[in-house]
Image (cartoon, rainbow, N blue to C red; front, side):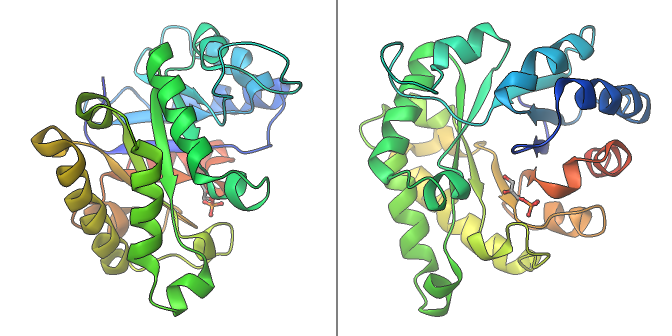
Length: 250
Ligand code: 13P
């Protein structure tokens, strides 16, 4: 289902259903079907249905949600399950995004439970990892990323780990206009790639490892040309249809 570089739009808490319809009218004209890549939208959960509706007939463009709870149902006010996300048309879910971790206090063990829940429901976890600025300055980047990767995939069977997507999103680069240099992103992606091989062997050779953090139309080509950078997870620059279409065409 995933082909070529992955271009994933994380809309965060932006775009109402009405905004999404307007966005898609422009985007779908500017982004013609391309068999050599994968485009995924992560709209807010309440906007998902309107995006799914706008994408009817464009099976080349896929959908995900930004968060799930790990239980299938129950007394968890404000939460949504992986099964509900799947029924609404999501085939992916972001897990452990830095805003979930650092704004909402999500912990490593919760990312594991969410990955397991997504896999049980038949949707693909996109596990996000990344260090904060002070951790980078202390030389802890690899240690933080490896801790988050191991925790998120703990107790999952190797085949399940092999079906996941990973995103490296340095916290200091998210929404700040400070992008990691392609060679710095590539170095961390290589660390992730090596660890995936330890965790789940050869089946992770093709696991997409995306970069996220102030990616834009100007730096997208250089980033995805870097070794082991298999796509982009984009926030701010995915909110304008023309800009996002030009990134997705990179
Ligand atoms: P920005 O592209 O706005 O820096 O956000 C990145 C991100 O958090 C994507 O998940």
